[in-house]
Image 1: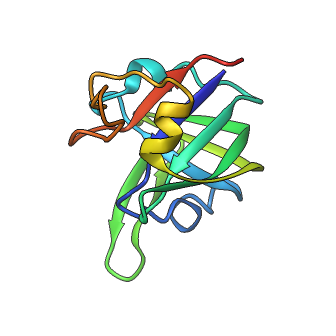
Image 2: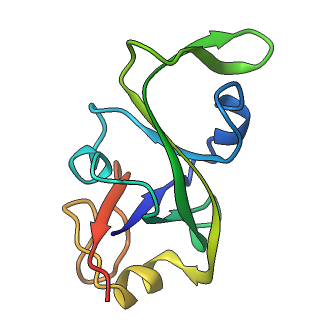
Length: 137
């Protein structure tokens, strides 16, 4: 399966989750929009990330999924992993698998991605978009 996720806020996944493993590229919790699609991400799926510049530059192959992560605030480092047991965060780990290089609305249109948080006419995200699954060829 393929998925589109938004990291327009520039969350530093590799820094935050480095205590677990290398290659973290996205996380989400059940209270966030897109969870129903996000929970379906499995090993070897491709996940495309919208970056801070609102572009999809890469698709990542999922090599690891860690469920149940708890974060805590750290005065020096910001957020850091407190535990990998008992939380509700799901973290994806992987490696770049595909170069894309498109503005995200163009990527959305080209892949016929549909979500209640994406404008169907323009392909632009509404506030709160996090994840959408889309069909493979």
